[in-house]
Length: 90
Image 1 (cartoon, rainbow, N blue to C red):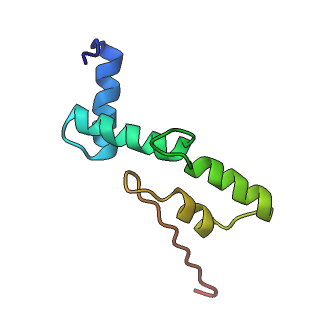
Image 2: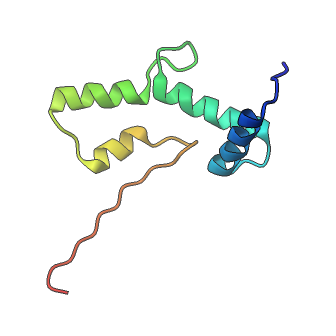
Image 3: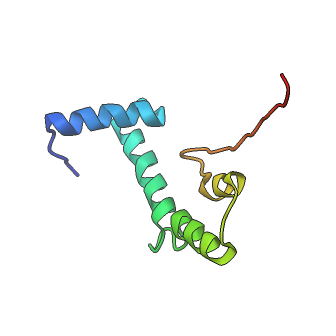
């Protein structure tokens, strides 16, 4: 498969390499495609998406904590962890 290069595409590919930590355009595109499929769902490759799950849980439970949201959206391509700290009187 050939993808026509444009200046805008080349910039996006460089930004995508930076964002994914991949050293090649093909690796960055693979990571981005995997992430999109996992978030979107409703495909043969990924029937259950994370975003629909997040919306469904919020609708069922009324609200979710930041930790619960992070747990749902955490995937290998873009790990997500919630940490909370607070202090009183310091």
